Length: 459
Image (cartoon, rainbow, N blue to C red; front, side, top):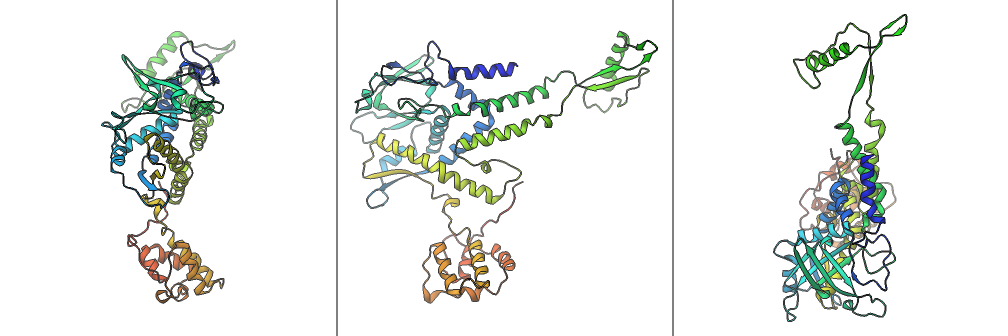
């Protein structure tokens, strides 16, 4: 009950309006909202630090997001642009953080609080870019609104300034000194709402399940009842106080309550007693199954894949596909949104596009990784009479994106058709990419002499 009351009080701030703060569960009026507007950060902070499934999910996304490399591209020609001053800033945003740690902190704060602030330290208007960029926790900064929204074309006409306060340190930032990113509220474009708000029940159920496991593992109380079963003509004979004390002392001193090699294992008594256990098998409570089900909801909520996390049933192929899916559907779109905001705030020319590039990751870049499967499938089609050798060569070339010169091509039928599918699979598994390319008359590629890892089960 105590744990349940604690969690109810923890979440009460989502639905209650404190006298000194305005929490954003309730809608904020777009017009007439003036002065300091406080962001609800206490609840998300506690949840992030106390629920491992949530912490793991956000940190996994942050690690994947931070793998990106900043690049600048000319929109018209598609050519890469070298802006030394810009890249010096982005690769070393401030004296405390590298690019990777900066990106990871940004992601964690945004996904936890639904709001994120970056301070642009631009010491002179003559500078093209700021001297540094620094993440500021939403728990330490307060935006002040002017009360005007409609008909405004400048952000400083909507946001007056930002107030920073930490212990005895106070500082006022001008509107254009701060980059405010937010997970916009459904009805209010002024503020952000924490993504954790819609996870109230999965998070609370996970916390309560862990609390219950902790209680029954530690403060579990009596493990059972030892009662007298002796009877006479009048009925049951109760255990006397001296007998009770004797059995208790014997249990503790002679038999022990832990693992002691010098203790006896059999208790002999003159009375007839019965043992009634007070424990309950935890597996029947399905607590871990509940935690796993809630984790799946949390992972899906943040656009990741459950196969990114440790599991006894994982395979190499499942993990690989999960990584690709997470980057394509979640991380890269999130990165595009971030760099679009950053480009605008830093003053990158509109003719250029700043973006985070992930093509250096081998799992996203190696289009020849499935060469063995492609060749085997085509081989089976040729053996079944579905394709001619010439058709097979054309399909293979289109699948891997290589133009095959006619004079250099060999007959796929002559090279692989003589192998059965089972034998071909085994042979191809032990071949490098370049060996497979040579098998079908294709030119080698750079880095293709390394043996491709095969699918296996993680333990």
